[in-house]
Image (cartoon, rainbow, N blue to C red; front, side, top):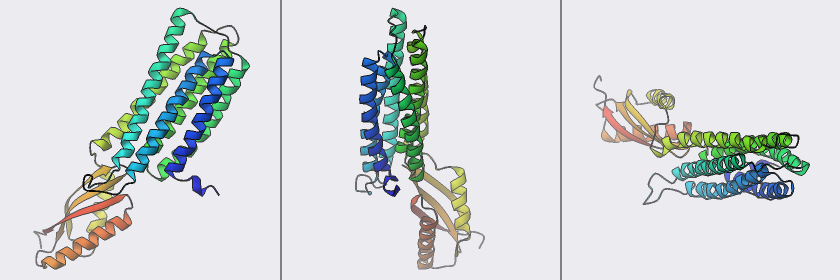
Length: 290
């Protein structure tokens, strides 16, 4: 019965609904529970809502087929959405850090109530469950944007955990620990943003899928009928998938038609055996040793 939830679009829609609910809950509990840390956490959820909407559109664009202006498809829209999530994390971290420093400098410490404690604890549980669900969907569908969204959920867990610790201690006799916990939260969020950008910027710069994958495809092609060797092979990432360019060596005495047939068989075999390969461009060269 849960199969319908196993898609990137449904996953993002579900995350959006949860983030709207948590924003309302944390803002209400932060105001009436007198917790600056929880109000900042609520604003973090508000930015998560914006990020969810952008990721949603990014995934929809990435699924569009190639057209005249985008002959290699729209897969990198997924990575752009992931980078936007990272930017949202930067904004969130900078804001929380600024507000925490302001509170510490001016000594504007409040003593939170147990309403704030309950809201922070509930958020941790919900976000941890959402993290594992989103990460599983992102990895299954190889979606950078969904995976980035999962890491955002994990950042939210740390945010709420720091908020909870600050609230609990502030309820005793050290209210300054509420904004200090906010500084730790800000640092962690900024660190997570850097991680997401580093993982996705390589794809936008047309990075290779990796020597391991290229060598695996090379070894597979060499063993196909009519192929005597692979002179070189290169790949480029487009979103979660990749295109392959390869120079295949064949016997120099065969006809042009036979060479074309070999190239067609190689292309069909590679795209059938390697599901992440969108297309293969094959150039036929004569084997100089035969």
